[in-house]
Image (cartoon, rainbow, N blue to C red; front, top):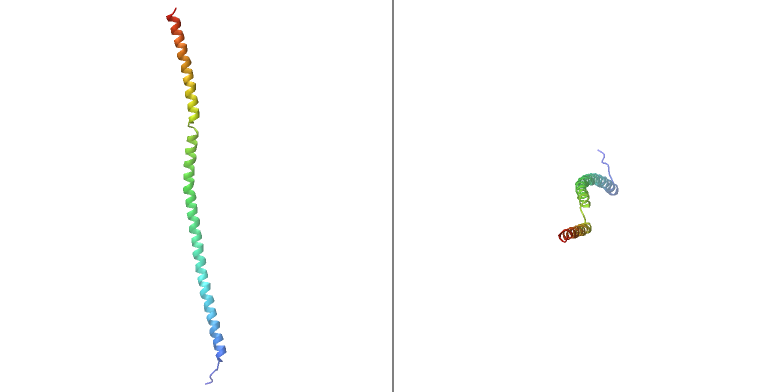
Length: 107
């Protein structure tokens, strides 16, 4: 039997090459796993964002409805102006009634 002799240098170079290949395989596998995790997180984030958008759509619809309703209410200034106008009309009416009553009483 002929024994094959390998120099120490070539033996370590072969071991180093095998170690580099093993490290590349491990890193490639981890890279794949991290990429998958990132993709999964990205999809989950997108779904959550869509869910929040739908939720806030409902809130925005409610705000719009409340704003529309509030825009139909009378404002304080309008109410005060209306009260002044009605008071003036009632005051004029009272004056006319008093005039008519006095007219017929003193006749």
